Structure formats: structure tokens, C-alpha cells
Image 1 (cartoon, rainbow, N blue to C red):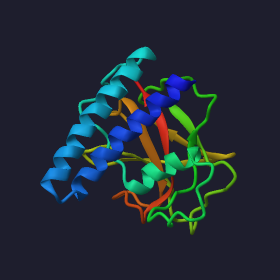
Image 2: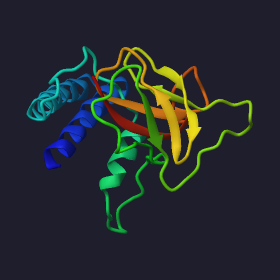
Image 3: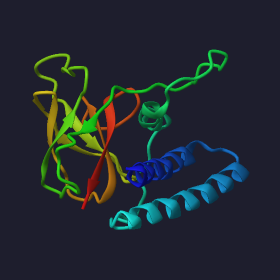
Length: 189
């Protein structure tokens, strides 16, 4: 379990640095971040290999926003000193892959994304909920069909390795303003 969790966290680290790169204005800081990203990617590959997963499953890393990264990290934060300043980030509602799902999943597979402890409903009956699969080339949207405890979605083609999906009512872009829940981590082969 430790190695599997470490692998996911290293993958999230790679996606965090990939997503943050566009916001780094200083060339010196960007160079340092690029160096850290390369090390994170090697760590991720090492973990993946030890789990008998493809070490570098896709040609590009998937970028995540700081709020998407914080959403996944928040599950590991149990407490902080009251004297700490408030962080300028927010966690989205949790979205998880049904743990009964055989891993890895394949493109075309139908899986359930769980919304534990809450029910996500569209604002009106004519608004569709989508699962947006994050990619450096832009998200791929699939319809998310409500089921008991979450949503049923079909894994789109073009995704391999540690992939991320968020729920949204928008099928044009994924931003912090359009994200309703997630991301969920899904291992795709």
C-alpha cells in the first residue's frame, strides 16, 4: 500500500509541476521547477515500474491546477497549527474511482466515479454533467450518468497511465470555476 500511495503522490507531483509551469514568470525559478519536474518524473517511473506498471505510460504529463493538486493532498492533511496563515487554495469535493474497479482500466470501459458523502446534481434538468479527462492537449469530455453514489462514465481513448477526471457542467473547458468535483485518479492501460 505504501508503494502504491507513493506512486500516486509522485504522479500528482509531476502533474503539479507541469500545471504550474505556465504561471512561473522568473526564468531562474522556471529552470529550478523544470529540474524538480524531471526528478519527480524519474521517481514516478521508478514507483510505477516497481508496481509492474508501464513506467512512462504516455508521451506527455497531465497538468493539474494548484486547487486540483490541493484537493488530492488535502486527504493526507490531518491538522495544521492554528497560527498558520490560511492557504490561498481550495479543495473541491472528493471524487474517487469505485474501489471495486479492476485496475488498470481500458479505454471504452465503463467505470463508476463515487461522490462520497454528498450528491452532485445539475442546476436544472437540461444541464448535463460531464467527466473531463485532463490532458496537456486539452480535456476530453464524456457524459457522466448519475448512478447510486456517483456517476457512471466511459473511459475515453487517448489516455494511459495515471489519469485524472473531474466532474463539470461544462463541456468546453476545465477551470477551477467549472470544476464541480475531483479530480479522481484512474490508472488506464
